[in-house]
Length: 168
Image (cartoon, rainbow, N blue to C red):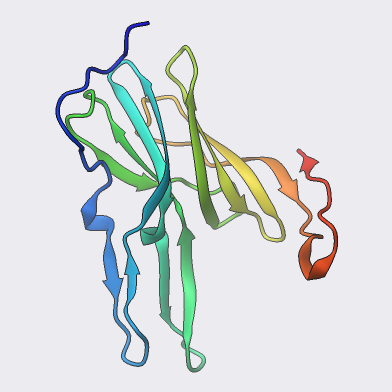
C-alpha cells in the first residue's frame, strides 16, 4: 500500500491560531479559548481534512438582564483543510443541522472513493442531543448543514436509566 501523502519534516499546526482568543470580563477570570483535542484526519489525493474539538467556538458575553455571563455561541466542532497536500491550511466550524444552533465536538472524519468527506459529531436540536453528519463534495472547503442521524430522548437525566437512541 502506497501512502497518499509523503511525510516531510516535523509537526505542522493546522488550526488557525487567529481563532484562539481570551475573553476578559471585569468581575470574572479570563475565559481562554484555544483547545483543539480529539483529532481525526482524512485524506484523498492532495486534500486533507482534520477535525477536532475546538473551544474557540464557545463564546460568552455579559448577561444583559443581570449579573453573570450568558453563552451566545456553541460551535465546538472545528475543522482544518488543506488542498495542497498539507502545505497551507484554513480553518472553520462545522455548521449545525437545520434549525439547530450548536455543535458539541467528538468528531470523526471519513472519505469515500469519490473524494467526498463525511464529518460525524455530537450536536443538539431544540430538545435533544443528536449525532449529526455533514458532507463536503469540494475537498473539505465547504460543508452541508448537519443531517441528524440519531437522536437521544434525554431520559438518562435525573437518575433515570439510559433510553435507547432513536434512529432517524
